[in-house]
Length: 238
Length: 238
Image 1: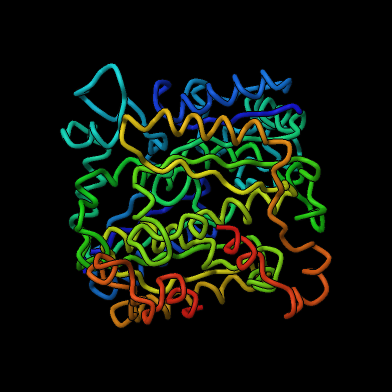
Image 2 (image 1 turned 60 degrees about the vertical axis):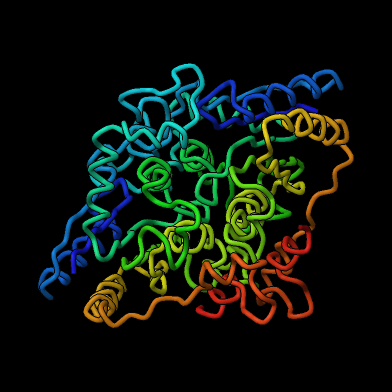
């Protein structure tokens, strides 16, 4: 496979940096081609704004999705789009910050996932523009596992990430693999995380995606009552 | 009340800009004091990184939460913290981008909500550092209401925003008011949105917050089975 790793962490020596290095090593060893977008090292621009367009169709009123149609996005955006286009799988590596991804990665979605490049009605979900590509989300947390969950103070991780897994990745057509959570561990247990990560990655081609609803089921009159909602589906995956 | 409006939209003339202007006007007329953080106009730095600290305690390995303890954050961060400290209510105004907030607002949380300023164990939830402050989230969507919901293709908005409402705002102790969704309308209906917004805002002091679980319920052995989870609570609010 061709694999794009998108990393969002300011410290190369961090666990996130190490997980990225390990992924690159293991995946290349298994014969995959790996490209890395290390957003912090690239100085990736996080804020979507007027400067993202080399020409403005309407210079007086900035409507982002309108401008995107005319395809004058800056080179850094086009480069990332090309990497996604060429990838069979995109691996997102980041720390959980405030129940979600760091701003630099949110900005990657805001800026790179233009319309109609990333979706156009009714090319959504299983009929989405990213159809045939897989997405794997790999997250580190500052809290140990006992802080997370519906009945624990940090809340349920998968529920927090619903906006990314369903609202963004599956929405655009990615087959979403079950996310990998690397919970905080004692320093002397870090080797264990790396070993578990290596085992996961060796099996990457056999990972089964989360099966969400098909767009045609949605389009009739909303998802029929006898079908599980995507939220129920993802929740059963924990 | 002292009200801080945090606006995240690149176009001042947008509906988001207009909703901010309307809020300022209506709230000041009602006798409140209003301060605005217009993140795009301020050129607010979105990406949390090494440059956020005037001195580094550990110059060789960047661990953000560790550095935050020594309180050498840059002035732009301190200024925003002061605004939050002085506010009785924080109003967040932004467009829904990829099921969440624009990166510039995510970056505001990543950078401004330092530790232990924003939370410290067990000062969370109803015992959180933001105790006594209210938060109101006001969002515009590009889709009409019939696209949203558990059984519709864009998914359920409140579920998408769980990471912000519960994972971030209530986590830090804000009383979270029911979010206001301004769904896409025809251009000739925009006046209606403004009128509805004005009515909401006139009643702002009587808005009842969403009642989440108390931290002491979490701390025993996890939330007891006879209590609704915060996710169930927020979901009933739709």
